[in-house]
Image (cartoon, rainbow, N blue to C red; front, side, top):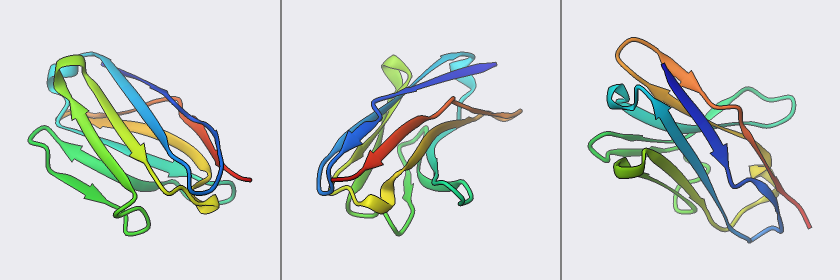
Amino acid sequence: QVQLVESGGGLVQPGGSLRLSCAASGSIFSINVMAWYRQAPGKERELVASITNGGITNYADSVKGRFTISRINANNTVYLQMNSLKPEDTAVYYCKAWTVQSNYWGQGTQVTVSS
């Protein structure tokens, strides 16, 4: 079992920045990939960014050049640095982790971009 706890969401003005954190606990040695997803009201959940154990990253086209995912294995935490935020980035952001056997979700953290 893996437990994921997100933090760092909040209200920010357009053009601002936020950094989300996702702390993993439990069977962390079995995690292969971690990622951030988001879900806006009335929309499907979508992949924002992912990172493998080896540090290979992948981003949605809508966030390339603005968001950066990073992973600190020593403290079992994955981060999402979000810069140049836009109103359309408003959503609940979820952390996800994959192991060979299963996948796990965090509870989500709200990000609101508004003036």
